[in-house]
Amino acid sequence: MTPTLEIKLGGRIETQERKSELIDVYCDAYADKLENPFLSEDRHWQRLEGYASIDGYALAEGWIDGKMVGYALGYRLPASTRWWQGLITDVKPEQVAEDGARTFALTYMMVRRGCRRRGYAKELHDALLRGRPEMRATLLVQQANTIARSAYNSWGWYKIGELKPFDDAPLYDAMLRDL
Image (cartoon, rainbow, N blue to C red; front, side, top):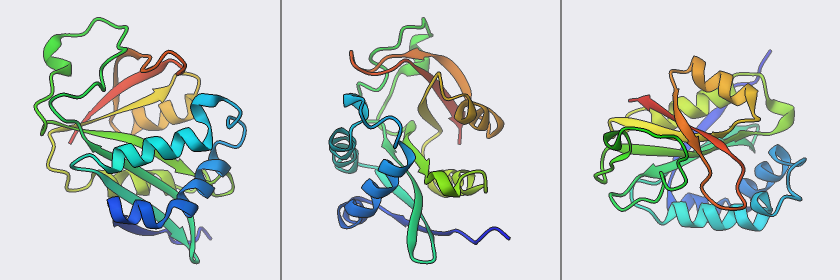
């Protein structure tokens, strides 16, 4: 029987308070990729701190028996966002125009390797997006991550293009989903 996932919702304060648990989950989920400087533990924490400082930031934590097994987080894209910078696919300008209230960016969702394939990622995903005031959500998924891409497609996400946000970043599919 699959243990029940307890979901806790939070924001900036919870992110700072749970740094150790968030990093532990990240290191487990990305264990085979941590040697990549873009995916290093330090770079990950820097990104989390940056995301947590943006208005509209939210965190959904998944816990089983007092241990964090996964999380999802994101923030509302500000009007001045650089989120779409690095888009290498031609899209209609109105698809990527932001007004500071339109789009929620799901920036991370992960589950410990030993807890995967139990529906926890979907539960975290749904908890994070439930009740959001934005019209839509966006995310970036590495093209090589076929399992995640397949899950996102089945959850109502669709690809609008390809994006490389930084010179040392991998190539991502940029996806959208109506909320």
